[in-house]
Amino acid sequence: MRAFVTGGSGFLGRRLISALREQGHSVRALGRSEAARKVVREAGAEPCEGDLSDVEALRRGMEGCDVVFHSAALLKPWGPRSEFFEANVRGTENVLQAARAAGVKRLVHVGTEAAFADGTPMVNMDETRPLPTKPIGHYPSTKNEAERLVLSVNSPELATVVVRPRFIWGQGDTSLLPILVDAVKSGKFRWVDGGKFNTSTCHVANCVEGTLLAAEKGRGGEAYFLTDGAPINFREFLTALLKTQGVDPGNKTVPFGLAMGLATVSEALWNFFRLPGSPPVTRQELLLGGQEVTVNDAKARRELGYEGRVTREAGLREMEQAKA
Image (cartoon, rainbow, N blue to C red):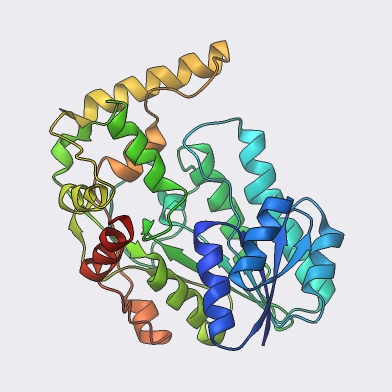
């Protein structure tokens, strides 16, 4: 099999490339900078110069490929909507256009549970829950729109499948973990409601497992949640995760209602006055990390044969050993 990967220099993309190469597949990966192309080359892929705005570069990279893995996305708590739209929506449109032009047969899009963050409870969600019409925050809303696009173009010529991992973590995390560590070290970290709620998680190796199975067995036009299995107490897990980096999150806490009020006012001020930087907290961060967010991956286990083989204990142990 020949595969094409977007976001190949990212946390998930690097692991995806390595897994594909270990299985004997040839891989090409998009890289918009020399640094990104160096990362994907070291992971085992043939780098292709270009970015998500360049349909022709995408098409050239996908030429002769059997499957496309679209893992590139802009993920951060704050920024202009136009920036998120160009990366997450327009970029996905371009990937789909290029895949059709190149004659690719299958495409797996890495979605997210964040696409459901509209303020209603996200407890034991499964794939029967429809995507909401008005998610809160630019990342959730643009990922929601991107997923709708991917599923809407499913056809006999191009089968499109979505995977939705919740809280990707593991050794080599260059996205979420550094932000959390910095928040703790700078004294800005606070638990919301004491962190006493459940969360689903998905180790990066389990995310790779589910993504590869979706390419092989996923039904076109369908989405699949991916997790590490049963939910875990958010405070328990995050404390253990941060401990692998030698930091203690402490006991400072803030009520959810107060934090949401602060986030709402702060966002309004930042938008109205166009203030630099980011608000102290955003509604998006609170909806995804300040209350229970749990998803059910029974569909992936049933239809794809997904197992989620890496336990939380094993993943944390790997991180501790890497830090030692």
